[in-house]
Image (tube, rainbow, N blue to C red):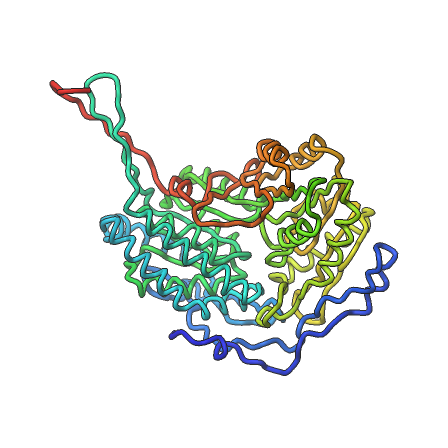
Amino acid sequence: MAARRLSSLLSLSSSATAATSLGSFGRFSRWGRGINSFSTSAAIDEPISPSIVIDHTQLLINGQFVDAASGKTFPTLDPRTGDVIAHVAEGDAEDVNRAVAAARKAFDEGPWPKLTAYERSRIMFRFADLLEKHTEEVATLETWDNGKPYEQAAKIEIPKVVRMFRYYAGWADKIHGLTVPADGQHHVQTLHEPYGVTGLIIPWNFPLLLYSWKVAPALACGNTAVLKTAAQTPLSALYVSKLFHEAGLPPGVLNVVSGFGPTAGAALASHMDVNKLSFTGSTATGKIVIGLASKSNLKPVTLELGGKSPFIVCKDADVDKAVELAHSALFFNQGQCCCAGSRTLVHESVYDEFVEKAKARALKRVVGDPFQKGIEQGPQIDDEQFKKILKYIRSGIESGATLESGGEQLGSRGYYIQPTVFSNVQDDMLIAKDEIFGPVQSISKFKDLDEVIQRANATSYGLAAGVFTQNLETANTLTRALRAGTVWINCYDIFDAAIPFGGFKMSGQGREKGIYGLSSYLQVKAVVTPLKHPAWL
């Protein structure tokens, strides 16, 4: 599809604009402080209608869009309304077999691993250029299928996807082994070789970002791939994979199967001809995935899983800045981030001030149709996640936390939830322990560094952490003490292409992005050759 201006992609189906306030919040006044003053914009009852044509709903196997072997389809829904956007081919084990066979043939017989690394990089650069050219269409699909704000998709996420492919395109011809000095008369070298066929399983919260985190390094290293999309968000990956083939990607190198985890996902994880697996999703599903991989051909697995990340506000913090950063750390992407700063730990000396300002900021958060300009928060992904979040909110109230703002559905259609803030949260409450994956901020109080280090680490997760302080010694102490794969100091959610990302403990294994991400898609081979009468050793 030719690139079009946003004005042609989006058309207003009515003149409705975001409504303001909901008087029903007065009933919660006994739990919090003045909640009846809630004024977050409500969802639009008549949402903006994207005027983009959905052309690609089939599976992509061996360079061709094809129906599922069973002929089945499933609906992908608009989170703003729950209405059907399109019916997408439902891949299962037979389709995974076809996709793996195509990837195997492309690796064993096709040109991809035999191209020079420079030529592979040129194809990836061309794809990045095409993706950048089609930003508006891609961002529209991402917003429509996922519910994230269009401005976020178009101005933040798609540029990062483009950057990721350019980053790894640059690495393609710089991957090399070493010459190793050894005792005795032998020449020793190491080769860094692709695994072969890789299985890539991506989640629904950042469909194309995670697409780029996996596809870009896998292909740069010379592998072929079978990508399984999330059932909730299949559309954008199919569209951009078409662009990849337009850039010159040979058939079979990248295959895309849409479908469900227990069928297509399980078939990919357990496939005997998949050499490497990479999965991003919940910790519970990650355990299933690694079990299937080990029970089949013991394929190595990279896992990026759940989190319950602490955001620590120290006593010397600039409270206004800390409030804004903590707000963004939790509420970004509707709170649907694996590394969301979902445990806000605030020093007792600034706690009361922080809570009041955090509540005020949540009440100002603009929630509504994600295609509308200026919207900060769209709907949750689907009905299941929507109900799960509301269940956790009820749990917080029932366990004695103070509900400062929010707490209910917003509007009458779709999966919108009011930005919710709890204070006086105790560590044994479910809202403090479980990954909610929604717009629910839980604020707790601490006295000193020893206490907050112990509490921050007292979790099975270890994906990320945030520290807000003006004291360098405090920052250094916390950086080394926190058991997390990423620690952000006076910032949060910084995702440069060169910065590795991954978790400690049950938040995963292995790293994605940066130079560390290459090792997930390469095997090391040692080559030893005898030397006769060497001039030197």
